[in-house]
Structures are given as structure tokens and as C-alpha cells.
Amino acid sequence: MKKHVFLGMLLLFVLACKQPPQRDCTDFKTGKFSFTTTINGEEKTTYFTRTLDMEVDEFEGKIDSSTVRWINDCEYVLRNMNPKNMEEEKSIHIKILTTTDSTYTFEYNAIGDKRKFKGTAYKIH
Image (tube, rainbow, N blue to C red; front, side, top):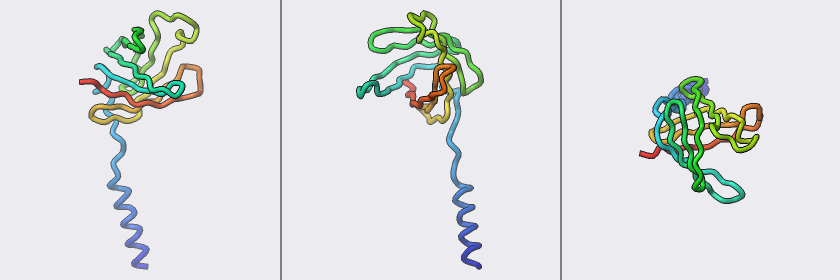
């Protein structure tokens, strides 16, 4: 009986000490960032600068601008300012899931698309 009580208390102690993931999104509302993803087996990096209401992306030498509409401190919607086709007209919903001192992990999807993707952005100092 004492063994079960000890194991139960040990389990509660371990669970109580586990820190929840950090989520301080305000540090990432503005700044310069990079995001690397794999496209057709090749790693590609996007660099972007975000203000409270605009984001400018550079990908493979092309620059694109989007408006930023914050839903709350950890979620926002990007809307391409100069879409060149129907695909670029779709707004992108981004939700910051966790943060560290220099990165944030996020999930994103085109609004109306049930498929969600995850990524990690790095703040460039």
C-alpha cells in the first residue's frame, strides 16, 4: 500500500513540475524573420519583415506584400496585396502555437482549406 501511495505522489510531482509550452506571441508581432520548408525535396527559405499591419516576403528573389489583420496576440490573417492568380487571392490564417526566445512554431492554412501545415519561424536580430 505504501508503495502505491509513494508512486502516486511521485507521478503527481513529475506532472506538476512539467512546464507548459511557452507562448509569448507579442515578441513576434513585428520584426524580421526566416522560414525554411521543403518543396519537392528541396529546402527553400523565405525571409519576411512584418509590421503590425503589413508583411513583405522575399522568396527566390521575388518580393510580395500582404496585409496583416491580427485576430488576437497569437493569430493573424495574411491577404496578398497584389495577387497574380486565384490561388494568391486566398487569405492565409496563421496561429502561433509555441515560442522560444528567438523562434515561434505555427500552423497555417488557406482560409476555407481544412489542411493545416506547421512550421517554425526564426527571428533575425
